[in-house]
Length: 252
Ligand code: 1HE
Image (cartoon, rainbow, N blue to C red; front, side, top):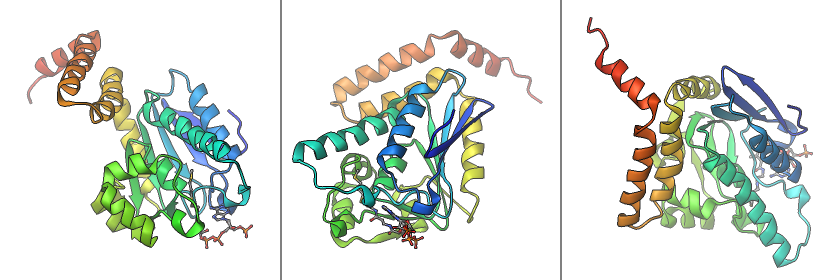
């Protein structure tokens, strides 16, 4: 798998995607977004879990500002919807995605990170939504995903003041689920990915698709959808095998 802006490897069913524009702090230009989209579209059944990390000193500096041009409102809308489409593929593509964060996780970089299901940050990580200072607004899903994690009130404040949350703040707020020593985020992310890969595929699928969708539903629809997801996962041979294995285990 050859791409210009990302490096992709597949080992033991873990697809590892490395954002590879370190000289530009992994700023997301159209090429990088195209590569991410093509990569997620082409992942096969042999890739059960994905890990995303950034090369160099930062995870991602967000939108590549050097590609800025005056666009019509409709062109900006379409561009933003493209970001949404790619990040939907990450969040709802059917595979758990783990991100390893370090350095800047900023603007569109934070939007990318929050479309992943498990986020591991090292102590150098910081989070910011500097769109206000750049004269723009978020367009890669932050007002839905970041806002769901830290709350709309806190996100509004974050945008208005341009404040930077450090790694500890981000961990406390839920922007990362794990906080590890400097340089250790990728090791931990790979470890978690390998662990997630041992779950039943249908359970992983339900965890990443059902939970997020149910969160947007009424209680009645949510409970019904949960039952449907449970019916699919629990009636599989795999579920039967795993439960029998547990019940028949030898107690030492
Ligand atoms: C960039 C970008 C970028 C760096 N677009 N080129 N994002 C931002 O507003 C964040 C802007 N970047 C920064 O605040 C800093 O670069 C960092 C804190 C991330 C890193 O600082 P540092 O000191 O390590 O690097 P640097 O010296 O600032 O940048 C190194 C190079 O990367 C330099 O290019 P060079 O050719 O002069 O070497 C920078 O111009 C380039 N670079 N960040 C383009 N973002 C869907 S809507 C989403 C909206 C947003 O994401 S808005 C937030 C944009």
